[in-house]
Image (tube, rainbow over all chains, first blue to last red; front, side, top):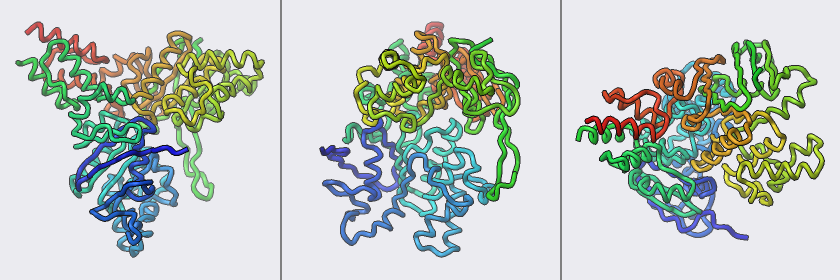
Length: 265
Length: 286
């Protein structure tokens, strides 16, 4: 029996965009991102990176995988080295870089994820959940990817750990111009950080637009197991109660401004 | 005496280096005193590494106290003769549904627990039916668990625990891996068990909005109980929670921000309806 996990996906991702990829479990998000660095090959259709078909015979897949970095779910399960620094060196070392370049990259990557020097020579297994996760992300950053794909990078982290990781990714993207694809089940996080949301349902793209445009369809999102951020529902309820607020709001800051204006008005 | 009680509970473990030499001792749970009544819905919050899961594992005797005592329904968990009773009375549901399901068919998976208790076949089937009905998964009884969504798998895990007829269920981050709908399904199932069956629920989570209906909240930090109260009492302390690496529901945070901007609304707003009412009063007074 054949089952199409993805169907008719046509997407163009420009350089430097921050994209949120959402969809219920089993909607095809993870299958899609595994196509972007060539871990899975399409049954039909093509995937292009900078205009070149990544499944062409003479295409350098190894280089592609260093350019499109994929951080899996629970990436800390993949840590294995005796200390944090060696673990982060593993990727660049395998790219064939010399010792000095490898170590420089590992150091820079650990700094980028905000891990303090004191942890560099500890066993990765002695760190907290959030720290381990950051080490695993550093391992991908040390490959100097142009595109960073994160599959639920904050699952299981406490709220502060969640904010720290997402803030750092946002800052990194601003500094380096990196393209980021964030797969997430938290509508609040997606609304706060990304410029564009792609909604997957049954292997197809259901919506592809700016957060406020996508969350306007909250009723359709609910039908496919998703939702809007809580704050969007609050604005809907306030509007219904007669307060003249903007209902396309997706973050606390916007909500605050809109409510204060409506009360003045 | 409550269904779960701990007295001066301490749990320590020894850290060792590569060669097995002792590096030091970590106190993961530090003098915790709990008294949870039958029928309570208790939430435990705390950052990663604060000791919540270690504490939870004491409730069904996966871990034993280094010092102090834990009683489940009056039975000391560290006494071997109580082990079976404790594990039957306090069930546990973990984060990853795929690690907890073993059966090829949903109803077989749910029947696994009571079968191991030596319950007669006829009664096992009765228990499977009532448990699946309690979590709204009865229509899936003939399905293969690996075809279910994350939320459905978690509800099957919960049904597997209910079939043991526990007095108490500990849910350790049951929604961490689920999509929004899956999270809603699991929390709804837990609340229904609490309301209808009067099963005591202990919910550990990082999603603040999931616990607004709890009747008691404990916040852990460094192995100790750092805060204790109703959701409203706890969520009124936005800054203190943030210092403990936690958060409040979006509606509570929005109300807190509006209050800081000078609006006369109360702290500790927990639901959308409460905020609409508070702002409605302000708007009319204008």
